[in-house]
Length: 242
Image 1 (tube, rainbow, N blue to C red):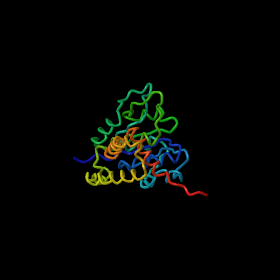
Image 2: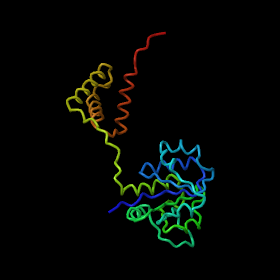
Image 3: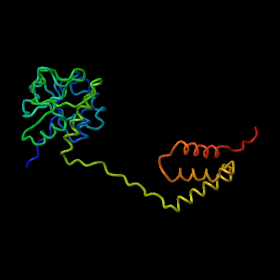
Image 4: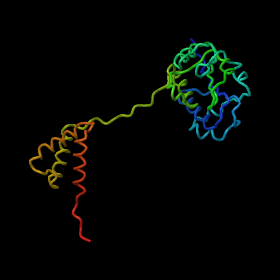
């Protein structure tokens, strides 16, 4: 079975070059390179897009510009509009994951529309899509920026691709217990020379706290205070008179 073509990202009336660049960066992070711009407010190319793209130059270089949305989607068979549900518009409503499932099985080209930063897509632009993509969002702060919206859709599409995760970094294994015990006894010797264990009757309990601190992660408040005491003892040096 032939793989479906990669979806095209269409930014409709984008306002700031920085936002176009950030959207390009989000696209390339997840393997998308085809961007179309419909009537960008500040024209194209935009000198502010490149720095914001952080190296996603291939997306910006290949970006196509159209005067109208109708021209931008003329060769697209499956158009998805990212928006909240519009009154008076009756269309299937999909999550980004559901849209990605449909896009990767579609036999023809797909595109995802993103509206202007301030207003999003208008009702006529949404009407040109076959389905709406939306996400559950905090109703008291329903504000996604352009790049965030793009990355949500691009990420869900990328799950169907063979993108590789960043290589794992090898972590050194824990030291043998003998090495750890040697370090602890070394520390205890240094502390005894500096008379840290005072009063003497608290020496055993303090050593036990220190040993627990040095042999496990997740220090508690007592352990932090104990370590601060250790550090303070090293700072207490006899000062030479002026």
